[in-house]
Length: 466
Image (cartoon, rainbow, N blue to C red; front, side):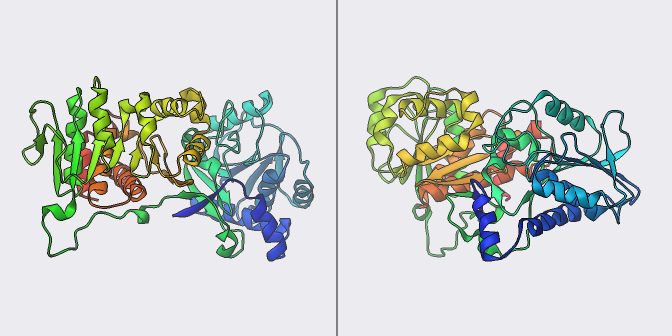
């Protein structure tokens, strides 16, 4: 996993103090990283390349880039709609003015652009865009060309929120380190492929403490069986509580069995049709090692649910229980919570952390996840979304592998089944949430047919073949 930082100004300061690197040297490295990416994307030296620059140091990166590109590409165009105001922007512009680099006054009626480089606003954006800036971004988005953003697509602020409009990049080259603003659900639509520019300093610079991490495919640890002397009980016994909407619990049970649990029992009030390899019981079996509850629960008996929650067994809780105050008595170390945004808003309200709606949550998901984890550090929270956010003990883990293929009924039930399977097999709550989430999203990502056609059974099959 990779470290993610709330801000990088302290890292920049460390560059100056420890490595004696000036702001100007860092800028040259930033522009060089952009240049290398452009050279991969644009092979024709006669191509038209448009670099759009703001007034500050993000714009200065773009001006520096124009200077580095002018020997390789014949038609580099600079567009500075608001001029150059920061000291570095002025210095770089003075250098460019000594060269034969074309500066344009407008992008109206501009044609045959191969590549647009967005260097308008960096991650320091802290106010809504004016009408002129919005019109520029709108015009840039309408250009049929490859698109690269410097540091972060213009229009996304330091929290990952978009005021009105943002530049839609194919690739974002972020400078030096990953920033938390790159991983909001809203920003995901605009980032494209994310790459980190090396600013010419050792990785030791980024050994600073952080509480936020980006999960990678290599972090996935599948429940592979290495024990030779084993039996079905060796791999745990998962119990899934079936509610009035039975399909949800059946899907979770099937997923749990297919992800390695030695035994899977569905707790039912009356026998139902299920795959032959799944057991049924009217009570929680005595040898149960993990429980999943909440999926498709619907109408339920509170006293019965309370008895199940009172059991000192690891649990994954989903769906309907996030609307019931009963959950407040069980926010301890043996829980994994898997709400979607609306359910999490209810949970935030029940816990008196915040009274917000889904729109407000989506504008600042990571902030509210952190606040929940601060109040309940022993609970493992998995907030579903375009980017999955997992929190435990005030640490945040971000899974960006999610895809629209998972926007289907049953996907969340499969996830609960994967988590309870790992809990049953002895994984910790945090390990179960991370590994189940990675398996869930990576399997969907690998689905080779049209993403609208993914079914729960396809997803289970994909997980078996990771």
